[in-house]
Image 1 (cartoon, rainbow, N blue to C red):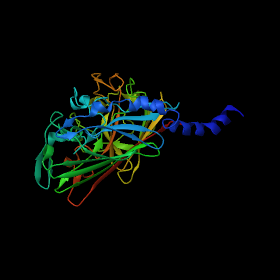
Image 2 (cartoon, rainbow, N blue to C red):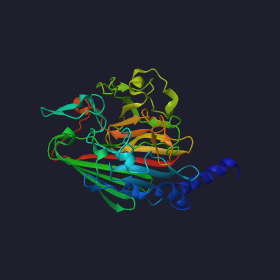
Image 3 (cartoon, rainbow, N blue to C red):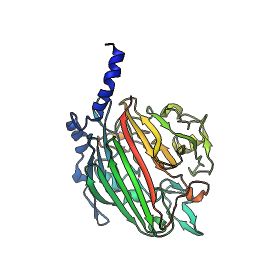
Image 4 (cartoon, rainbow, N blue to C red):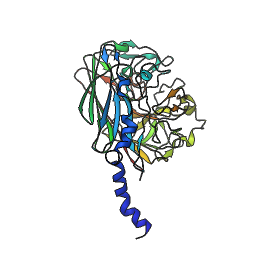
Length: 386
């Protein structure tokens, strides 16, 4: 039998074995890479609530660690092309690094009430003007200086692979109207996805745009760069921003620009572009308008590492995704393996509504009213690049 036939016959079998590796032959390696994080280093009392570190494992042995401080994803262990477990999520091995950061990077964090920026930290709803705290120049970013990333969530582990986080955000918290009841179900699916299902209700008209701010490096947490990753985003348009990174309200075609990821493209290929949008963001830090347009859960983006062969598909029912290329990571933060996180060593794909939507009536609405339920699905699904 020649080599090409051997590849056709045995490659699918090898890939299936790889995806099961953490649960079977590589169980000890999985223990070393993820379970080695000391749970005691995450036990504290903050605002009268106890924090902790929780383990999730699916039927294939894919593993994750999460904490109820900020409902943060601390680690995700997936197999590479050789079946070796790789932690692909940036984060810390102790809670103090999250509670007293040198500069808030939102590693792995739940973001709310409003993900991304609200221009001039103000919006009007039903003829009432609401002023929010500023934490990004003149803007309000990721729910403010004490957003959902900086609170202790109630937590219930319902199975080895599923955890439910809930949080009551009181009327007026960070300037937002209404008592908001939030639930997030974190689940490791049997097809190796880290799935997040968000729901929220309110007793007063408000705005709501939740997301997750995990940073990924598919070559492994602590690897030098993500610029060698290959990225596809299923979006023909972006929402251009001004110098303060607030959307202008337009939708711009990606064709012929550094923002065209409609076909798989190396992330670093066009980073030296003089395109004004690239200069405003210091690289990639923009919202893409997904072709799915929030109709159903569908593929939004795909990224893979040419080093490990690990691929991550991002699925969502949201109208947008913020691709952030780690432009503000500067080496001052050290990860779980004791390696400093350098410039552009992690990327985010944050499924969401568009930035500053409350001030842009032409954008999909983020208004939530009593009797309505905010719903949002995001899944980061891992495999080996074939």
